[in-house]
Amino acid sequence: MTGLAERLADVASGAMLDSANVTGLSHLSPEFIRMTLSAEAFRKATWVPGAKLQLRPRRGSMSLRTYTPTMWDATHGVTELVVYTHGNGPAAQWFERVTEGQTCEVFGPRRSIDLRKAAGPVLFVGDETSVALARALLTIPAETSYVFEARDPIALTDVLAQLGITQRVAVVAKDADRVELLQHGRTAAIQAPYTLIVTGDAATVHAVRRDSRGWQRKPRQVMGKAYWAEGRTGLD
Image 1 (tube, helix red, strand yellow):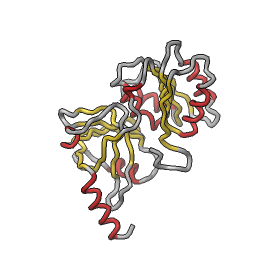
Image 2 (cartoon, rainbow, N blue to C red):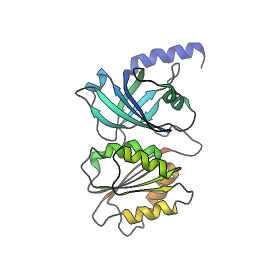
Image 3 (cartoon, helix red, strand yellow):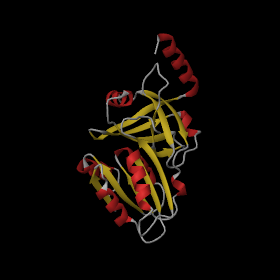
């Protein structure tokens, strides 16, 4: 961007975005950060589990990055993010430098997956980018089984345990053919009518949706969203 364009982006963001304070910060692993944000605007916002919050990681740009709050306390104006800081983009760099007490600019919450619409027991399939949504699902009174694919299954299992996701959890190594992931999905599919929620890699979302049509115990509804795809960014 030129200097003028950067200044215009900052002016526009000042009118559109809310300022939030980083009031809590901890590292769950080298790639996962747990962050608490506080803002007066959060007291007036209506949040539902699964909604998204967008953050502007760099001044002089209107580029926003999307995250799923794991909880929302409107009374105290507080929300929490669990962020997977992979790659070397502006957002990853911002989270690498951020400190408690710093301010940031946010937009939302906005509609995304409405977890309240998950009917009956839930089968949740995802990857590292799905962890915050899985944590948000804990706010819904639903019996849930989890199947995750991960580049480092041991590390992700530890992160999930720190977030209280320890029951009925399978974490498998990410593989192009997804055989193990799909096998665990079929095994975890329970007898009762259930909801399948699948997020993360676009190719995995497609593969799980397609494969579930042939499962002996088919889901009665499927909710899903691709968060990323190889060679592409900004899907959500």
